[in-house]
Length: 116
Image (cartoon, rainbow, N blue to C red; front, top):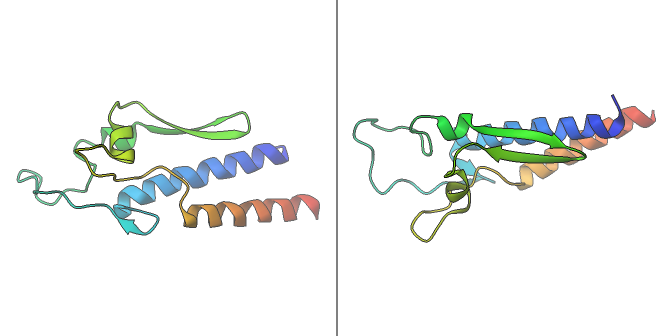
């Protein structure tokens, strides 16, 4: 595997894991998502942003050249991630401080192995 490919695949994996962690922790970059105004009585206390699980399952992290891109097959993922005038932002995709540190650490490790 080429150096660039190894770095790109590592970043793809880190981004994917970070997104899933954000859903599990109901937070982004250490900041909790805003709670619902009212609970869904049928679901009791279900996770934020997870009603059927379609949006979470529909996220795909892909390598495009030397870049990593995140796609969703749902039309509403962007609204949740960025927020709207009537909907609070509950970001799950983006470069958090922790993710940036993880990426830097992994790239340093790959480069150390490559140049040893």
